[in-house]
Amino acid sequence: MARYNGAMPEVIFVGGSGRDTGSTKLVTFVVRWLITAAAVWVAAAMVGGIHLEGWKSTLLVALILGLLNAYLKPLLVIGTLPALLFTLGIFLIFINTALLGLTAWIAGKFDAIHFAIDGFWSAFFGAIIISIVSFFISLVIDPKKIGRSFR
Image (cartoon, rainbow, N blue to C red):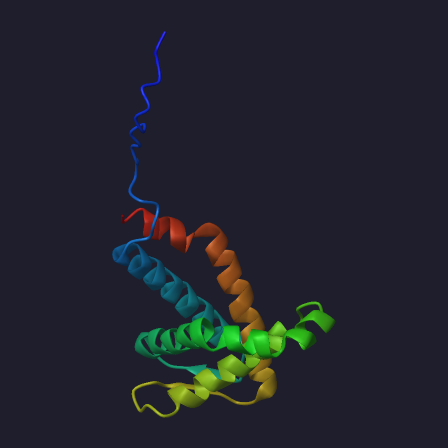
């Protein structure tokens, strides 16, 4: 029978420290960026009022939209929390619409980006399509899982 000698047991970590490394985060970001680009492309193909030309514009629009979603959307969600709760989350569609419109406005400031939205309803339906397409692609392609595979 083994006796406890008072020493601390050794701990062996398998598979790293459990934290995401810089390369893991970068790969996850790139995968999410490509998913957003595919969703933006689908929305532009389906909604007549969304005008998008070329793969470079698609990638740049997805980058702008992804950065707005990462940094501005959380502030908008907190700021509109009563409306979100009252509408059981449906108000998120309007936040996404506003962010897509802001993306078009920012993209319009750059000559290299060929992206425009004709009006509110085009942005509204585009935001819905982008959300749905991103959701379903993310079910098939898990950005975090792919990122972790590059640890």
